[in-house]
Image 1: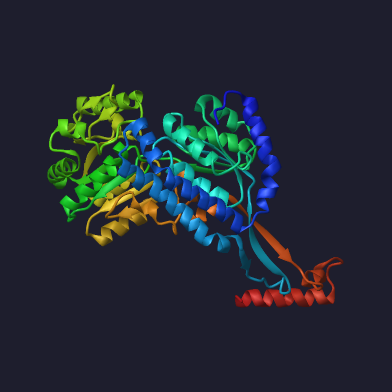
Image 2 (image 1 turned 45 degrees about the vertical axis):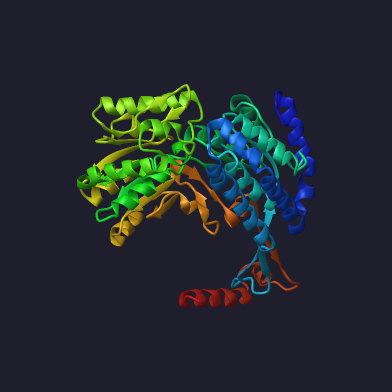
Length: 478
């Protein structure tokens, strides 16, 4: 649905207000049926998706399957398998002064939700929260990024074929206009994936109407190579984590902290890993059909400036450093001798460039991480379990992985989200269902209530006995 006027959004929002309570009353059977239709359409139209992401930024079909279709299907399957159990809620334990009452926690839809998704994984990062919102019984307006217009159009058509617009609608248009219009509406929950800077604006909009808020942001996710690590294996895993989607991944390894004596051997191993993935020469890598392009020319030019700044200030270019802004190509690049005062260490890179900083002691690495905003992810590679555990215990991040990269988000039985500047709230599996649900406390009291004994006037004999008994029990710790 292409939006050109604010009036269109207002009418759409009002239509969802009329549908909101009817949708809330639906049971698991109806919601599961809709999610299964979405699953079937996504699989049936996968070739269209491959063509759209290839046209938008050169994403290979296999990578699109691995990072767009597969995680979306996993999210749907998790919800359809477990939704009946999730919707039952749970019974809360009884309390000392409510022995005859029963309490249940009921999961209710929040109402109308806004999902604002980014361009880097345009399908997965819209479909995953959408599945959670639909499973919880909400109406949804979703706004994909206009930086991937063909994929946005595909999503609008796909979702429009499954849901009526008064239940779920995908709206297209520039974020500077349509996005701003959306943030003026009093949604019950806003789910935003994108940059911390825009996240601040979204958070302010949510606060104005006291909406629930989930921010999936980003930041500079550190990777720490430990002494005694298998350098070849570590380099290959880091190369994959850094080059997947041309480094345009919110949980990509942003920089590497490497023992000073291992920098040279790591650089050689990293070069070998990149050559095995994309080709021996810079020309081969530029021509590789398996390496995506940067989303737009401005982003590509920005990456080139970061590399130029680092080299001008003394960083060593180990390999890469080639840019073709017209073709939006940024080569896999490794920089060593990087210092914290370089521009490349001041902002999230979001490209296939890995800066390497050396450290002498683990304390030095820990202090470096602690001195910076809390990252979305943290990676540790090495055999030293004690050092790995010390790093985990001495730092914080939205998620962490030891001896692998990126894949921690695949387990839907664990939450995914940020902390501090890297995000607020979480989702995936049941955690996504909870995010889009209001956990309502419902107490049922029988004809007799102990609480009546505490009504005024105070100081009766019965009250004194009950109070004495309660104090005695609490002193005993029961």
